[in-house]
Length: 223
Ligand code: AMP
Image (cartoon, rainbow, N blue to C red):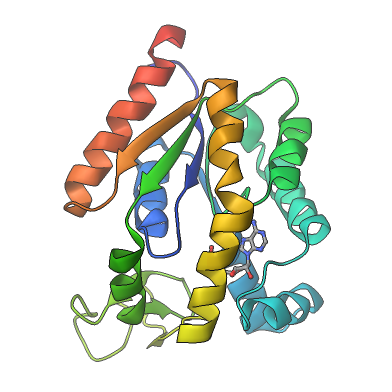
């Protein structure tokens, strides 16, 4: 493996398992895990101006405006130096404009691979209905796989709750926006020749293995 981590984007519907897989991949490669939804939820929890503004969109399942999201991602990439060292982007880009802007920000450090984590809509709806998340560190849980003690996070002791935007109306709106705004990114990255598909329906460990294989295949020539 080369002397830097991969520059990776994970695409997938809400509930496809992006968050879990992205944090494992980031740990595996020792790179930054940048999840825009987690950033906005943390800011909303702290009540910062960014959080207050983002929450008004998140609560109804709408996308936060591109300028705001791009600003946040640009700042995080600059602060961490991750354009050089590698990263896993989770939940960004979500529109073609965000994808264009990401190319501008990355400049001469282009993406290595974009993984489309594919899960049918019926399955994601079932997953989202039972989904719970730690309000503090964002660790995901499910009613079928709860924390060990009550609804308290195993990792940080924070409260584990249902997300405000996991209501049926907000979920339907987010899935609709995914089809309209995010699906075109699959074509965008296919044209760039860096798209890989991974079936996200199986066991989480198997999905992780398939993702690692996809990353290795696309970064092997730089070894
Ligand atoms: P997620 O945790 O990825 O499902 O994101 C939760 C919410 O945060 C979304 O429904 C949007 O309101 C907002 N959000 C996260 N990432 C983005 C993005 N790249 N563009 C616009 N809105 C976003």
